[in-house]
Image (tube, rainbow, N blue to C red; front, side):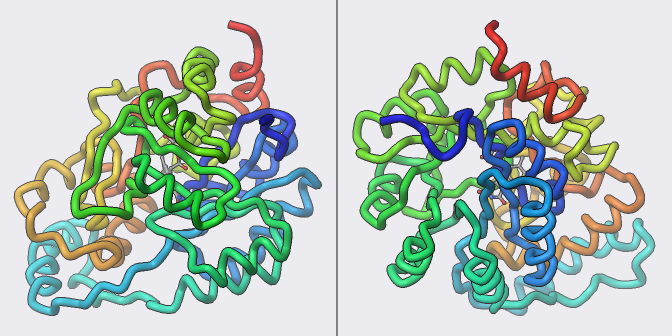
Length: 340
Ligand SMILES: Cc1cc2nc3c(=O)[nH]c(=O)nc-3n(C[C@H](O)[C@H](O)[C@H](O)COP(=O)(O)O)c2cc1C
């Protein structure tokens, strides 16, 4: 079986949080890879405009990625306790008090409607599974569908559900773990996970985690991947929406600075440690579950970004650190495809 969606087997990983600009996504697709919009937290109308902006810049395939929602009851006393712990940080950034917890529990359904209305070439998702009718709706439009798995058990569920390919998210991957089966999460190295999945699945496996150059790409392809998905190395590209402080932190970080972090969102994610992650670690056992903690810290992280303050921003990053280089998407894609 060959990878036929794009001319190059390279996917720019979806990255929610405003990093996947129209420029980044379309340029990756123009270079022969698959650009991806990380729309997890995006307001529906902003997503619509972004899809249209990407379409205006490229006729090549691109994808949209959403987070599968889960119902979490709000425990008011747990939320109030967290607000007290967050208060000094909010005050430090100039807030009179911690903003009330505010989020739209119906966000996914609204984003989903936009995806179907805008008819996108490819769709990927993480944190769970689609429902049968949702999968059918995508298939009826001829959309290429990719789910995220961190174990073989999850990958088999996604294959059974009708996914066209599975993203094998290895331990080295930056951002949130996509784990959706079991109480705990497993951290299987990318190469090992790709090998195991490619032996046991009938559908293509996309290797993700820690890849930042041609050598890393070749290793994962040799392990049995049909394509690779790269996140962190695209964040430092000129076209990405990451702030200059975030890019600088990534460019100067060593791999050991990237750790599993729960305190920003209530869901485990790999990123750079900073003052917030270090000081809040003592409360790790009492963090409200995702997405509650994510929304509780959103105004703090936004303000920190505005101020260029990396102490209170989530700096998601994979383990492929140490050799990252700033530059354009075109330059990076050339490095990935030129012989070593
Ligand atoms: C800042 C950031 C945000 C991310 N957001 C998402 C997301 O919204 N959806 C998703 O499926 N994966 C997300 N990921 C994972 C990436 O798509 C990709 O699989 C991962 O970055 C690969 O590992 P690497 O960072 O070591 O290259 C994110 C990763 C980062 C670094």
